[in-house]
Each structure stands twice: as C-alpha cells, then as structure tokens.
Length: 167
Image (cartoon, rainbow, N blue to C red; front, side):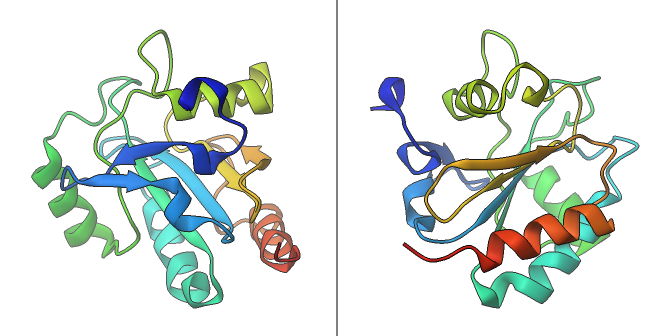
C-alpha cells in the first residue's frame, strides 16, 4: 500500500525498540514529525520538542522523533544509546522511531512521501526538519532545521494544527 499512499496514515516505521509503529495509530490526531540526531548543533531542539509534548500531548498532539544518521554521521549510536541520550539529556518521553534513512535512494517511503507532498525544498537537508501532519493525515507544512520548536512561528503553526476540525 505504501506505493499508492495518499496520507501519512498509510505508512509505518519501527519504534526505537524494534516494534512496528503504524502511523495509522495516530489517525485523527495532528502529528509533528522531526528527523533527529544526537550529535548535531540543533540537538538542543529536543528540549523544545519535549516541552511542547509535555504541554500539548494531552490535547491530542503527537510528536514523533525519527533519528537519522544521514547528515554528518551525527546519529552513530544504536537504539539503546539513542534512547539513553534522549532520556538522560532531554528527558524525552515522546515516541522515537528506530534510526531511519530520510534522504536519498535509501530514504524510507514515508520521507519520500513527505518530500513529494511538500516539494523539492521540503526534503530534509539536515537534522531537525519538522513536518506538520493534519488530523486527516495530509502534510500541512514543514520547517527547516533553523526553525526552533519554541519559536513564535512554529508555535503558532502547531496551535493552528490543533485547532483544525476533527474529521
């Protein structure tokens, strides 16, 4: 079904623990997807993402971190190391997928879909690209690594995503 995907809910990844992570489990909920890395200059954004998760998770927002080693080999660790790093340094409690390719020929089909939906510039060019998925599973917007999760612009986009009507 992933070749004919029409929404994010048609995809799955793996959880950091190796179990299946079906995006359809989040149907009807807005999602912020972020490709992450532990050794990046943007890594402190984990803190802002966790703050957002703590404040808005109960309102239905899902934040999904997708570790990737595609940029500068800044996510070299195994699953346990990634988990420990995120937990110890940023107290991350939002879901994390297994390490995933997010660009190039080996990119996960979900990230190929995001790039197709968002256009050429939506393809992640570094760690911490942020994708906003609506309650209907469609890509609403994307933000580059330079947009901090605590910035007014990003916060406003997420608030608007939460206000979007339920289907």
